[in-house]
Image (cartoon, rainbow, N blue to C red; front, side, top):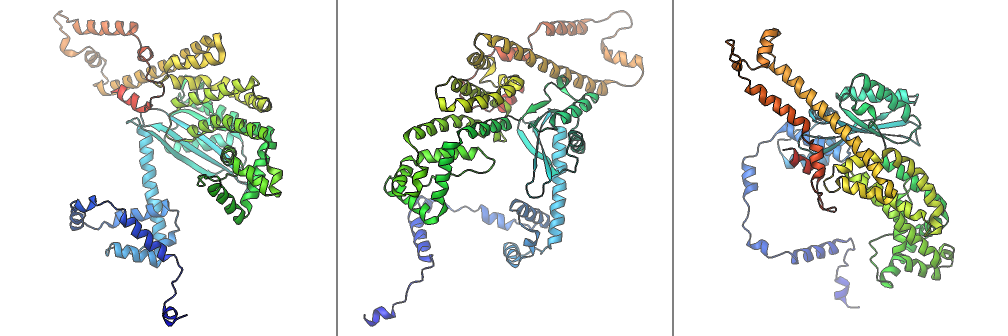
Length: 539
């Protein structure tokens, strides 16, 4: 060993060399087009016109604390204050108490803004109601969420109340809590429906709410549409009940994945084999079950099918894992089960989205019904007990709420009446027309209810703005148009005659609903925004 090698400094293995080389690679791939671009002066202009706004700065800090779920003590940390001082020399330090007070103040402002937005909403508001029990504290919690469409035909979703309940946990107590929430937000006379799970108290709670809203004349169609069962909840119950009957195969896969992922070195070796020996993309990982979530079971089966050959190879190499290996027949059943569950998984993903109008729900629910009917015919015997169990739970939901989903689907210009009729024909055959006629008559009743409500609203506004005073003579003259009255006997009846013709023609005219149904449907799979379609149609 020579002296030069002894004097050479030993490189420090702290990852910085890799970081520097990554930066060089990143810079080397930068396009030379940027060298030709002219430098923008907008930022320099902004800096010249910049004026520090203390209120806006405090509001932004509140947003930072809430979005990041940071502690109020963050504003007192030296690092935070140093950062803010560098960003703006005019920034004044605030305490955690001031930050907490600011957050509550801005929350109150935002709450009032949303309350005003709800009051001004042109249509009715739908509610979803969730409750659950905490395993740690044994407390009951409720979450009330409102869904509405604003004047620009945009769908909104806001949590109105999230809090712990006080005993007793019965329908009357929970109904009182819900009514209090609606009154505080000023929407107790603007509710269209409420979506619930199948909790034991739901029927009593809904009965109390219906009676209250009927007394206030704040319910449509005498409450027929008021209660809606949560379809996502029904599907979850169905799939969980069905999966219990095929637990032997699913359990072997679950225990095998647990064994592989238990040790880090074993997990690394598994993915190395998949990468080097089977040339697979190992960014897709093996999934394990999550308690209370069947979605994870589907993802677990899907990932195990992806790594099928690797898992079979692992069983040949690892004697302990051999008890978890699946036969060819079991792998075939897993593939069929995974394909079957994918229908439910896709539908649940649609239901879980907050920006999907209910006009899109019918298609997914119909697909579930169709798949259950097809599987019930016994093509795959190992699934028959599972399908029977699932169909038993689904049939009750379909019988009660298929017509509500159908009415919403008809208002989708891609579906309309023909698609709904097609779906019912695939299920009921020659008897489908009876179901479709019932759905159409219910839709007309709902449409007529909205027409009556619209006329009563417009007439009350007209009366309040047009009546000059309480004198009946002046009022009647105003109603008949004073300019057309001639006390000498020359009465001009042209205006009255035109009004008579208009009223006569409207009685024989087709309604807007009939005109809409007679128009041709749009392409079935066209990516159309249903709310945007109706916004343009309402102009």
